[in-house]
Length: 284
Image (tube, rainbow, N blue to C red):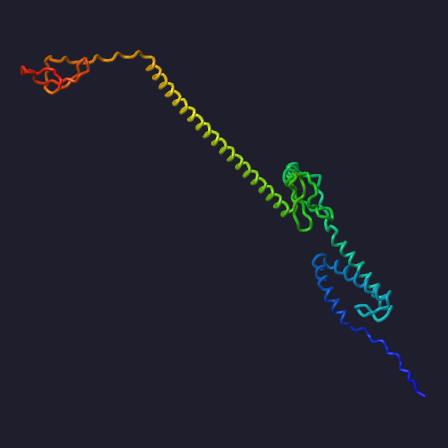
């Protein structure tokens, strides 16, 4: 027969951080730093409370050690209670931090007339009486200021020309936007003015060219009419009589030996010495 040795059950060891603990801690630490920078201690406690509560409920319901390594259900219940306490404490601290610390002092009703007039005439700086930022809320007195935490807000016109509370960045952005819009409008007006001037110059040039062409056409038409009138006058003038023919008579005396002429019968004649030795017209 085989002897069966009963080995005593292993006693559960104390809490030891597992590898998953260090991995989860490395992932949670950046979140803790972000929440601390954004919301302070209250936000960090809320974050840690939520993580502890979720982890404890997981270990309690599913009977697992979770990434923290909770050894048993009692430890999970304790961790859940601690997470809830952290969450509650963080919520209280966050609410107290967000609440306004001081209220705006009331202006005394009794005072000198000159002081009241001076206070009403100049813009006043008053802290916000509410727990939320007054940014972009409506206001009714241009130039007046108010503070919320460390930010100074001024009552001014937004892009829609409505009076609202603006911080320095928003006021500068709106002023830059208005300046840019004014610049665009000025450039557009200048471009339109330049286009109008160019159109007027082109119209004037075309009108001058048309006037010069009309004057040139009138000059040419006048010259043509004058030439036609001269031609018509020449055509209507009576013909001039032909000059009388200068005939020579055969045998008559002449001068200038060697000169020629024509008789009435159309015969050629020449001035030469005759038989009597004197110059007479005779046939050659």
